[in-house]
Every structure is written in structure tokens, then in C-alpha cells.
Image (cartoon, rainbow, N blue to C red; front, side, top):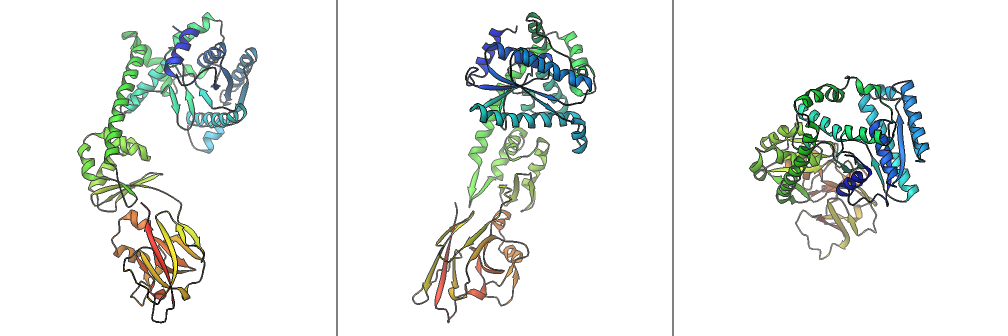
Length: 454
């Protein structure tokens, strides 16, 4: 049963770290029963709140009626109000998306803006409250089940989110019937969105037709599913902890490259939960599990990528590489001694040729200082680059040179060049250009030491 007391008890149990008196809340209010009851409850228990209402302009006069009702409600209870009017149909057409998707994108983008503004004016973090309740939870779980999902999908709507936006849903423990009884007992008026009675959308079809049919057989279906969801959440926490620990133990780093040994991955290859537990952190979708698994038996250099990351098969590894769009571009002046790059640090020193000892290690470059014109540039290599490798009298495409070194794709992408104008002085850590080598006529030598970053 919903009452002010049970509401406070549920809040204290579910959100113990969020004190009602010491925080500020933005409440999404449509004017319907759920959101109006939530706004009333928060006001009655003394919470500091602002109401946010979006007029999507989709239902003509009814949309205006909703806005006016919310304005009247906020005025009656002296709760600050923000209203946002938007041509949702035009937005959906412009960006070629469904009306529901467009409406969701519009309202959450606006909520995010409001929360940032309120954070500045109120001087404290802002929490967005939405009025999702137990019936919404049941509908969501059923929709996920019918579409096909894993354990996480069956845990439904989270009571709290703390990713890009701090969202709290304090009514998930209460049914629609309990909200209605509370409103009736306290004389709380609300309006009904006529589109809720239509079965144009999947959620409405489940709500209006499927669940009533199920309730005829299982009268407590809502409470039973909600209770099951809570048990599944506990199970999901155990699974996530176990899976995360497995991958944390298996991740390796070599020369700055994060990777998973294929033989370690193959220990759990038949369990999709483990693979999903890894790849979801790198932008992959559940539907890509099979495709990622195939990568382990692909040829070296094969890869699959998301916007943020690339998984590359190399030898006995799957490398996990970030798609970093930024490239190396560091201007180096003659007075610079130490230069810090993404993958290597360089040390510059000019020495006399007399008595100089040459270190044959490829991380050392010895260039004729008299041929150097400053400043120099440390940059990422490009496919059009070419140079004259030490020992050769003719130029060679850098791409072909690097290919002959048989570097794995990640290390190849990280090769930097030390250049002077359009000329390459040194393929860092690999080979200097023959045109700038030390000769019998050299008097001063520019000695450069490359130290790979860990």
C-alpha cells in the first residue's frame, strides 16, 4: 500500500545515500497519474523540487490541455516549473526516426540541459526523478523477454542510474493500482493521455491486452514478476562480479598494448556470458558475440571494431586497442632536450664526433648536426610517406618498409617519424634516413635517444 510513510521507507531502503532534505530534484511530469502522484509525494515530504514538462505537440488540443494542467498543478502547490515545447513530428522526420524515439531523445536532452543549469544555480548535484512504477517494470521485462535477451535484460528498469545522468525512480516498488488508490484517497486529480488506450505501440499492446489475459490466470502476475526481477538483480550482481574478476585476471599489457591471450579466452569460449562481460565494455553489442569469437581463429591482423575500440587478432593474442583519433604532432626546437610523446620519449643532445661511441641499438639515432634545420616535427606516419633507409641510395615507401619489419598492426600504427620539413630524419626506433647519416666530414652529431613508454 502506498502512503507517505511507505514511500519514505522505500526511499530510505533503496536510496540511502541520497538524503531527501539535503538534495534537489527535477521531476519529469506529464500530467498523468504516475508523475502527478510522484510530484505530490515529493512535495508532501518536504523535498526541494522543480517540475519539468515537455509539450511534444503531437496531440493538438490535448497537448495544450496537458501543459495547462501541469501549470495549474505547479501553481497550486507552489512548485517551480519549466515547460519545453517542441515540434516532435518535424524532428522525427528530419532525423529519420520513430516518434517515440524522437520524443525520448528530445526530453532527455532537455532534462540534461536543465540539470546542468540547476546544478549551477542551486550549487549542488541535481537528481532527475521519473515516475516508472511496477507495472512499467513488468511491461519492460516482458518486452525484453520476447525480443530475446540475457540476464541483464531480465533485470528490467534500474531504480537508479548514475552514468551520463543521475536518475532515480522511486515508484518502482508500487503498482499502478496502488498509485490510483493513493490519488483517490488524497483527492489528487490527473489527466489521461488518450494515446495510452491505443495499441499502436508494443508497450500499449502488452499493457492493454496481454497482461489482463495473463492476470485472468495468474492474478498476482505483477507482484510475482517484480519479485523475480529483484532476485535476478541479485543473481546478475554475482555473475558480473565473477565475470569481471575473470577478465581482470586475464588482461595483459605488453609494450603498452592491452591484450587477452587467446588460450585464456578459450577456457570460457562456450559461455557467452563471459564473452559479453568483456566486449560490452568496449562498445560491442550482444549480437556481435559470435563475430568476436570467430576473430580468435582469423588470420593475423584481422580485426573487428566499434566507434571506441578495435579488437585485433595477432599471433596468440586478441589486442584491445582504443580508436584514438588524435595523432602525434609535436614541434621540437633546438633548445629542447626532452620531448614526451604518446608512445616514446626522446632525448636530444649534440656531441662532437671526436671520441663518440656509436650504440648500434635501433633506439639511438646519430645524425649529422650540420645538416639539421630547426625546428623539427615528431608526427605519426602516413601512407604517402617515403624515405631513404640507411644503407640504401634510393627511396622506399614507408608503408613497404614497415611491412618488411612484420610489426603487428597496433605497433605499426604507433610508429612515429622525426621530420624536417618534408624530409624524414628518423623512423623512430627503426631506421634513420641515409641522407642525414654521420660521415667522415661530420663534425657535430645530433644524438637522439628513444625510450618507449611503458
